[in-house]
Image (cartoon, rainbow, N blue to C red):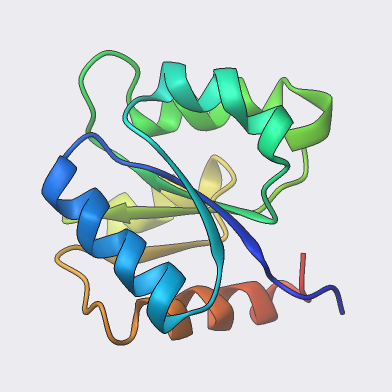
Length: 129
């Protein structure tokens, strides 16, 4: 199994970005790149080569599902696991996210002390990549 090291986090809220960075880098030990929009993610994703992408659902401009579809068009990102992070976690919403290719959903607000473990668990469920 490949080790999970590089996390691309796409989130438009600066406060949530800051908490997630601490949770993923300091608690989880990951190398993290944060983007403020789907457009930013499309610009840097191939260069960063993430092992996994954490994607906010509701963002201004390009939303999470659209960003996921556009990332899938990039050959280097076509198979990269994506986890949605959202407060919209009703059963039908989660099923919709999974139907468009998400490997899981992490509810917001998230616990900074357990976020990395949640990401690792979803990574492992998928067989490590």
